[in-house]
Image 1 (cartoon, helix red, strand yellow):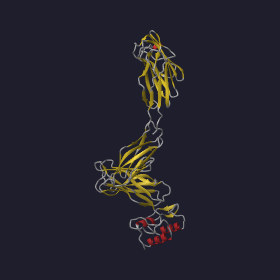
Image 2 (cartoon, rainbow, N blue to C red):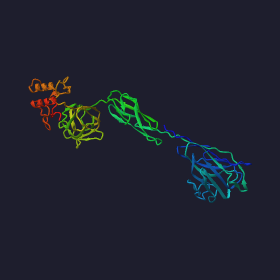
Image 3 (cartoon, rainbow, N blue to C red):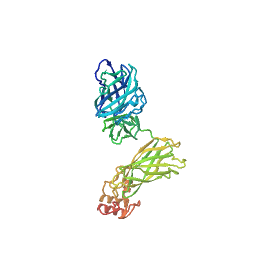
Image 4 (cartoon, rainbow, N blue to C red):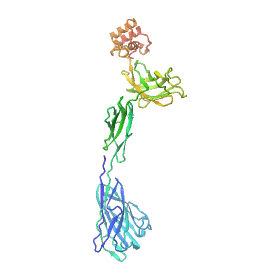
Length: 492
């Protein structure tokens, strides 16, 4: 919390001592007022307890101009004189009510922190024993501390209808308080709800009393985490609901705020979008990734989803509807600034539906743009919106998969279990060559994982030939080159 120092000043109106009469000054704010930081206060000064009508008066107003300043001044001149001709750099009040003659009033700056106010009239002002609205002054706080203002009438005499009046005035002290300025931070949204396993973004705003903020986010949630810099909360994949709190601290100003967050359990899914693991040759520049949709109970009229690849190594270039499951549909894919691939799929005539079932709904064509393709890339749907026959959103579950590079020619040992897709040991040597020979001689039948690695690009770089779905002597020769670290089409 940022605090501004309190500005206080006391107005002390001290008149010269004299016999008999007790003239006093009073103000429109009484003895105390509060203003906002850097604000100002308007003070009307009155003279009370007058023994008789006046024809002229004058006071010297002295104040500590290091702490306060006058920003506007005026005399109650009855509206006849208009703006008061002053020499100070302040505004003037014009046409204030009152009994003084505007032609006989004025102010003059006698030096820093000193102003002379004069009033006069050709008649009498006011009636004996009544209050006289004398002047209006606006004070603005310029700095912290206590500032004394004195109003002294010893310089210019107070003249009544019968002559000069010797007046006694009791000092009057007025305290002006400046409120503390509080820097506050506010989180939006509050309260908030996120459905597992989706994400939600929180934002923070600061009040005008804050300097440039620096936000740090935190949470006390068990089923998710917030990014300390971006404010993005990622809910975990959970079947348990949770109520927790998200917090932000503006470390530059000390302001804090909290927001209530409800993490809703993962909904029962009627449709699942998933990406399966596929293996591709690292030398392939173009990749096609099928997206599987399981919709056993709902037909689907439209699909919107974002495929997120991590690390961000793929750029989508096209989307192809599955001709069997989605005839009549159009599919569009666009690479986003954040690295995701936005996919839209629908029938332009609004009539076609994807029937219930399980299988590929569409495929996305990618180019690899991430450097060396030597590790699996996780790819999964996010923020999916699917519509039923009435264009009503369907509860969707999302399951990621991966695109993994084929280790060309790495066929030994076989996968640990059927469909495990984990054959190979990360190297190509004499054992892989002998296993490849067994495949060619049909002594052994390769598993699907082995078959995808045994059929390799053949030829001599740069004139390489793509795999042809046949395992033969040409593939064996490439494995021999690989084991001897000679140039080959697998590693080219």
